[in-house]
Length: 379
Image 1 (cartoon, rainbow, N blue to C red):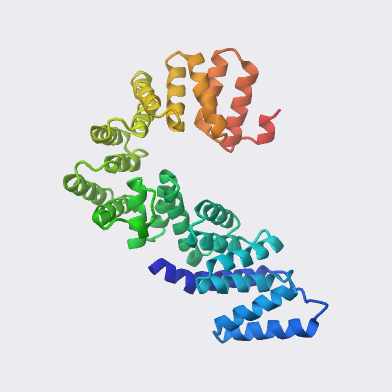
Image 2: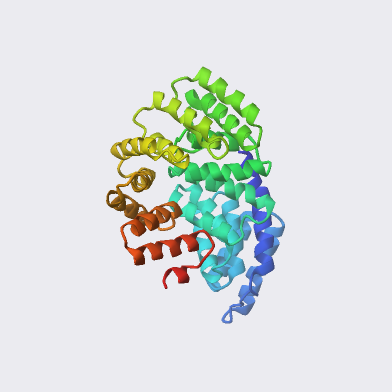
């Protein structure tokens, strides 16, 4: 696969250089100084000459002699990854991370290994921690790391987050078949990987991915034409109108509402679509209309956080403040960082005369929006 080749050719080189620049000086085993020195020299020579099996063997022996040698664990893990020995690579990289916890590239590489063996939640956690520690700062590494993060978000059903990652990639000029197929899966809300695409759905997924990528790149006219072609060719396919509406909403909410409503003709019991319509009408100040869709969303899927949020907000705005509280409090219990829920709670508590609770929520809103601190919120 194209991106897979980039990983072996670019990522290992880039991550190796990054780690060597920042790695602590190698420890030398005191009990067997000659043996350890010979092993490290031989491993380095084998690696530089491209004798990967011999290099792996010698690095294994060297790290057995000195388990606190970080360079050895890094080279061992990266070389094992390069020959598809993913499980041993995970073990080696884990040793390296234990010795150097802030090594973002190593966390990202372990995440890629975990991806290959199907450990998807662990892989996503490692990739995101690696990104937070700078693993995606180099352009040649960013593409592969962000791409796999988006794949994992899709595989785990976090479709909107995946679309956000793909949008960043597209804006930076990364558009190819791998990326557009990934976008297509996210847009169609299919929690699978590109390798698992059913051939009978390949054309649809490709068309949807290209249309969404065209929109993300800023070509709105081209995107509109591409989506219209999909609507004509696949008129009863769920989630296509929803995807187009989701993309349109930030800049053209009226057209987004029209697309959400068209989606309901295909998926009339979709809690997500009703929730998004409630959100859209609420943003326009039409809370009474929004409340109807919010109630439908909650009735269809009470576990949907978005349904709880819009129902709570619309109940506050239409006068049923007490009725709103259980829904809003449920949202912040499962998602403490949800700014919109805290805003609605602040208003609800204020209207109920719960001044201390209202003040706490307002301070939390300031902290979450970057205008205050968590410490302020706890005053």
